[in-house]
Amino acid sequence: MGCHDKELSILFTDDNRMAQLNFRYLGRKRPTNVLAFPMADLDRPAKQTPTVESAMLGDVVISMDTALSEADEFGETIEHTIDRLLIHGVLHLMGHDHEESEFEALQMEKEEKRLMELIELEV
Image 1: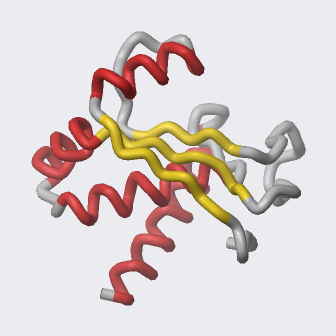
Image 2: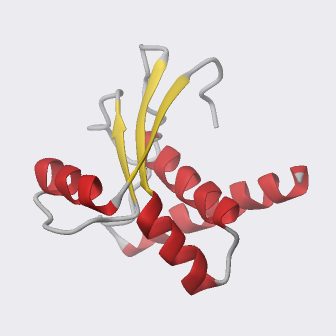
């Protein structure tokens, strides 16, 4: 992914704290499954790799309450769900976005599937 020797902060929390973070940073009054807070300036043209001058790539926050619900809903193991959410968060840190356009959402989904397949090959 072009981010060798980078650090990542991961916080596992509950829906209550996730709702607080989601409201504070995105103005949304509900919990969500994953939030990502990049260290890089992502205000750049699409498809251009962000320049990360710090060793810290960013922070990914995962709600375990929502992850457990999604694992049950989708018939996944909790490990699979956490892997999926972590990949989703890291892709956001790398500049991917699924809210700006349908094309970008499809590109992000394709990359998520590719990375999940790599993880599944390792197991």
